[in-house]
Amino acid sequence: MIHHIRHTMPSHMHNQYPYGVEVVVSAIQLFEARSFTYTYLLGCTKTRHALVIDPVIETVERDASLVRELGLDLKYVINTHIHADHVTGSGELKRNKYFPKALSILSEKAGGRADLLVKHADLIRWGNGLELEVRETPGHTNGCVTFVCHSNQMAFTGDALLIRGCGRTDFQHGNARTLYRSVHSQIFTLPSDYLIYPAHDYAGRMVSSVWEEKKFNPRLTKSEEEFAAIMEKLGLPYPKQIEKSEPANLLCGIAELMDDELRRKVFGEKKQ
Image 1: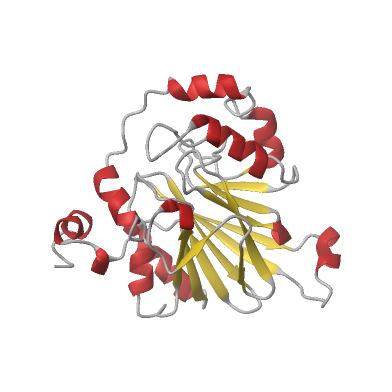
Image 2: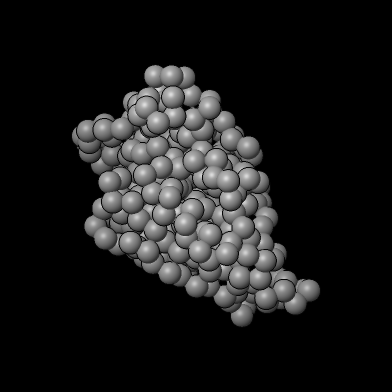
């Protein structure tokens, strides 16, 4: 499934760009059905520079073909956190001969390897005056970050904030109280009309807003005490792919960094 989103800089933000830069982002939301993961392709219509957020290894060929079809120059491959339910496609996108200069990005607190390790308040600059602000939103994992594109009022929240839900907090150094405080201090403080683009949805929903989640999220509208109690009682099974996904994602899915056993789990025999 491919969902096209096109954002032009809101008129009330023109004065923040004193050099007359017209900021236009073309964004595409892509879906991977096995893990219910959303991948995002953002392109600058002026420079053709692009970045991908949360790619999945099973759909790397689709993503790479789309980047090439649109004539984009892939600059960054970004993960919001160390995923447990799928192997990232970052390594395979970086291996692609058409993207020799693409750089992987991960939070420095995730404990993994990447070309660029980012921290709270960093700015990822790309395209024609475009920026993604890094906001640390731990709790689902200790290395979760939300990437905010203020010029186009978009927040890519990973698993920290889902549509009418949130990521689980019972493994990968998760903590319910930490997650509650992260969402309330780093996401719910954004303007109400900012759009929320999560890493997953299990009911076919594609986008929400800060206003909607502050009003309707059945978990995060509760008190911190109530939220912690809800999360403690979820009783979810562990992700089926965690044994290969977590160690592979700590290496950004780069085959050359994996030992033989992990490489076989991720790629079978084709990368031996």
